[in-house]
Image 1: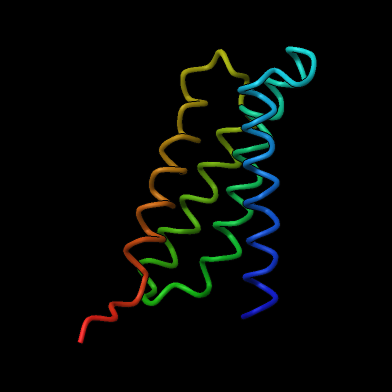
Image 2: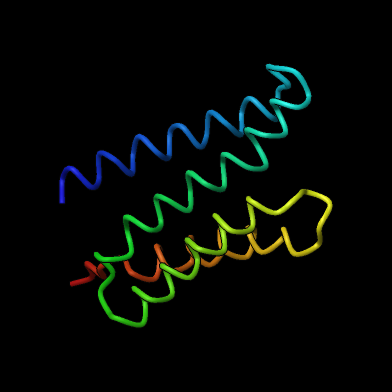
Length: 107
């Protein structure tokens, strides 16, 4: 479990760095677009894929795999295609599933 969390942490930091590079135009326009609109979603998709087996129910697990797939597949489509927007749906779904899967510590 600890190794999985470390891997997810590294992937998350790399994904944020990709977004920052795109937002602040740290590289050429082509590289900025590649990092912020493609690599970011692939990294997040991989993170969701690694998280899926640890979901509390099978339904959450399958949904997280679907969110991971949407992120990665959507990132592979050309940016001009409307279907490439599925990557955003995967991102939002994965985030919602991550929060829904958190244990409730109320006493």
